[in-house]
Image 1 (cartoon, rainbow, N blue to C red):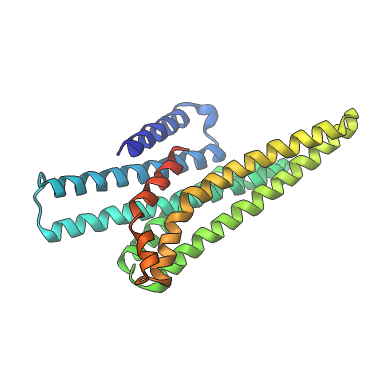
Image 2 (image 1 turned 30 degrees about the horizontal axis):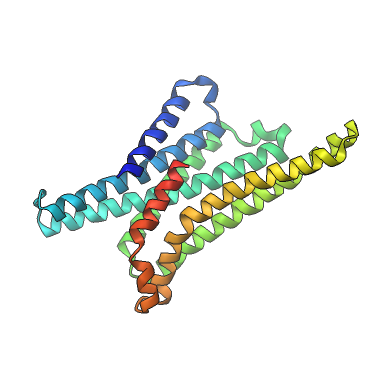
Length: 248
């Protein structure tokens, strides 16, 4: 609950800052704003589900089984949809950064407000649809594998784009170093700083998201195995890590 509330406040501040500052009304910051909204929804949905479960266990909330089941389905769709949209917007931000670096002169003609708007609308619509299908058919192996494959594809996309951007940055740094005849110190600094930034970026993403998708993979591969059962018991910890990713 505490993690969810911290993430909620953080992401509300991000959305408010982008909404109030006209200098930030550009496609790049709209993607950042949508990422904040997705992370906000991740936090809200997990906080609400946790609060409802605690109230039900304490007997402070009386509800019929059918009502509880419907509420659980709505919460699960919200959680799943916000997670999928969060991953999508992380990928969209990576693509936006890539275009801004490798197609700098054409960036504003490629990433226009209408195109960004269509991309944002498509991500939200796809997230709602995919999460609804996932919750409706969660017991089907193909659905679970599809969600895990989506995570792996998004991780690969981000890794390839950011590594390519790091290589270009280091190449640019070496070019500047040759102009100023300080090649070795600049090249080392560029490589270390870039590698550290990239490691933090992808490391946090992998650390926070991988356990949850490992859980889904084991549901498919070994649902009855005792060792996998030990992993299943930690699903709340995995969701807490996802909220930590929203905070970071």
